[in-house]
Image (cartoon, rainbow, N blue to C red; front, side, top):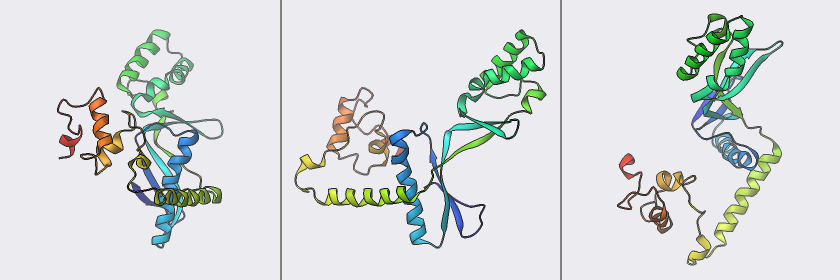
Length: 219
């Protein structure tokens, strides 16, 4: 949980925000990530007098590019670092409507893409677009809450039924360079975990001395 902000409903309602630097969630990953937000909601409501109105992800990697449609505001989710490039066709259309010639359009758009802003474009085009932070709400339903409670109960039971002395029953999720952030940064056992050590020894981007590649950053 990264932020708890007042809701438009007023007291005692709040909204929970979780900052995400990764890509957009889809399919199974959406539901798995949603469990985390739901746990924040249930924990906050059970330990305080607050009521949670919405639970949302703040998608750091993305931004909404907004413009006025015929009857409503149209929002397009774009990569924050290259949103002008992703909006190029729409911008080109606007400039052609203003009767700029193709050479001028290409020149101005090339510069806008390079700078990732609209400063080099005509005011008539710049004024049609604005940016908003990208937040994605995760809808709360009774079905999802019950699924989360069952998931927690079943997970606890599965852990408690394991033999603590049998190492074979405690195999970790396979570590790779895409999911190693937890092991390399968050886990307090990363300096003694044999599985993480094996990952470092076999990984092509390990340090030469086989020490934790994040130690120097967080020491």
